[in-house]
Length: 337
Image 1 (cartoon, rainbow, N blue to C red):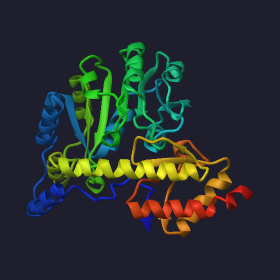
Image 2 (cartoon, rainbow, N blue to C red; image 1 turned 135 degrees about the vertical axis):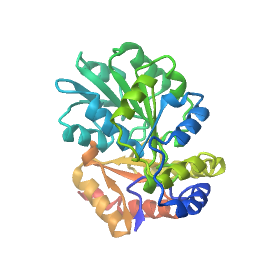
Image 3 (cartoon, rainbow, N blue to C red; image 1 turned 90 degrees about the vertical axis):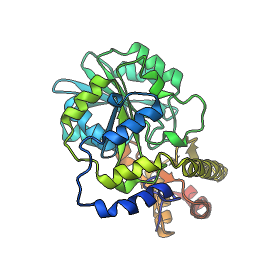
Image 4 (tube, helix red, strand yellow; image 1 turned 180 degrees about the vertical axis):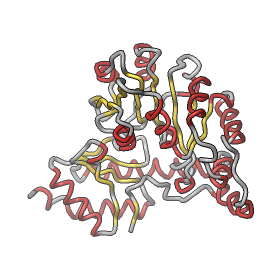
């Protein structure tokens, strides 16, 4: 099967990371650093921050788990997009946290809608930027407007899992904004452009007081030793990251243009996937079935809040050609549904 359902890097993992992992195999009997201080230090230097600003976690999901479980509390609430990463609403449900769903505008989080959802009990606002599954971004100006108007007691969590794929110039410089807004929290990952999804390494940058509280709730050794070594070396693989970004940008543009020419509703994406929405759920299901029958795995977005859409990852050139061919062959038949 052509896996275009999980937004994985089609070029594979960082070569420098792979080489480092192979050299580390003989040390599998050793425990990793309890809170990944070496990676914290390297990330801080790269971001022009202090190690106290950085939390390393087992993917972004561990950080989200810690925050939603421990930072909201009974009687309070959190706000997420009505179409957004499935993990937010799942964790809120698991921990019995009230989640309020803010309507999107142009398939991205809208500051005015977020503010309308807020009250004195709002403890977290989570913005996936780019949005998952739509690929649309919130600009720096929009993020600043939210931070200026929101209570300092409300943490604004910006999930930047796909930020390395962004080419739009007005994307927020989040680490720089941390100095002005102590309630800003930024989450990133090594799973996407670095190609290390199987090793589960993410990181959060925030005010030291927030990081200290998160580390208090984090169990030791959650980030495995191979993941830490891979992340350390992947950060230095500048050529691989640039290659991955360039290939994605080229294929993203081609897939968007071809699907639009075939008459499909496609949101301009700043990530490594395309969001295609249909007039009816039946049309969506028809295309999903046809893609699957052609050996292509796409992602239905019902659990993300969009019942009539598909998220299709940007794959290799030949993978994307297969997607285009499938849509082309079925574009006429869907008119009858």
